[in-house]
Amino acid sequence: MKYLAKAATLDYDAGKCTGCRMCVEVCPHQVFVIENRRARITDIDRCMECGACALNCEAGAISVDAGVGCASAIINGMLTGGEPTCGCDSGESGSSSCC
Amino acid sequence: MTEKDPKFVTAGNGPLLRDVMEMMSKAPAAAGRPGPSRIAGRVTAAATRTERWEHFRCRVGSFRDSYRVEPGLYAFGEPDEEADVLVSANYKLSFDTLRSGLGGHDFWILVLDTRGINVWCAAGKGTFGTRELVRRILETQLADVVKHRRLILPQLGAPGVNAREVRQRTGFKARFGPVRAADIPAYVKAGYRKTAAMSTVRFGIRDRLVLTPMELNPALKKYPWFAAAALLLFGLGRPGIIFADAWSGGFPFLLLGLVAVLAGAFLTPVLLPYIPGRSFAVKGWLAGLASMLAASFLPVVSVALGDRLLLAAAWLLFPALSSYLALQFTGSTTFTGMSGVKKELKFAVPLYIAALAASILLLIAFKLTGWGIL
Ligand code: SF4
Ligand code: SF4
Image (cartoon, rainbow over all chains, first blue to last red; front, side):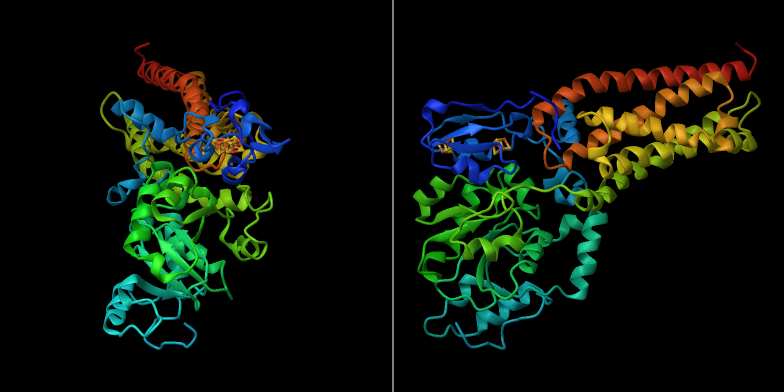
């Protein structure tokens, strides 16, 4: 299953890549493969913007606008004018429906 | 640590961990055994009957909000100073899933304080994060418990943990292991190598099915409000409220409302890959439309929707409702990103508002014609 086409903000600079494989190890959707000792993006539409690759790429070759792909969280964020947050860390409020 | 110690609780993590900790604080630390202060408890793979019931309750309601384990270092089986250290969240369902996948092996389990949230969500929020991991490693004096410097993190914790920073600050090399706990023994045996299957998140029909109660619950909680509004609308006659009309006119609407909720919050998640389109709003709308169509063959519905104004209102309102509910499911999926959801909301929310406003106007017009005013 893939989400909307060309929506993901994933950006990758092959020039900085050292081929360390970290992005392959962390990505839950196999967005990266290593070819000729460099990473390559296979299918950007599979990226869910979790941010794992960017956080763990030591070479700083990856950037992504990471966040939660959760409608109610984003609506929450829009209404309160802040970051999108789902109610799930306010455990006591009982509104943890998103995860 | 080879001999069994009767003071440790070995079955199913049944008693409160607090009790276990108390017992252990009284037990003198034997030579070579990690001192009591460092180990929070001992656990095994088997889940007790109570736990299975608790897991079910987590799936269906707010019980999950308070289902936590004490953070700290746990012994799984009979780990020694060479045993691998697995890192987990303190949502007990996550912890128990991890336990259930490790049967027959010995590990240390380091439980982080994620405020009772599962690994993936907590990593997104940063509570399953570098800082908390470093803190726990130091607090549990992990470096004295094990001789090696290896950590195995769940792969889904990677959005919150910077492995390099962990190494710089604690000396421990964090590896991101498989997505599923059950693959951990095979992963370790293969020399910490993952197959592509081990690192891919699956989202099969079963995975989606177990998530539907949490989609249905919030929607059904609001359903009485909708029902009250519908009954009021249909019951409202010129002389006052007519209960017979409220029921006969309102019932088909209540039924359609229920159908729309099921279409958006149950059918769409379950049939997700088979409904055309990539947009959840579109998928939900199509599912709503199809369900409406099916429901309108029921005599009670088709008769009630004989009025053209009502018919138009119903077709505008209910598929839009299904679409809205389907969009909520993006929060539970494993593959929707923030930019995509924002994109969807941008076109869908104005349409929802328009559909709602138009159907309210149509319903008002229906009432007014009924009263002979229009
Ligand atoms: S993590 Fe960064 S440096 Fe390493 S292979 Fe991926 S892109 Fe290249
Ligand atoms: S942001 Fe997440 S899903 Fe997207 S490529 Fe990176 S690791 Fe994969």
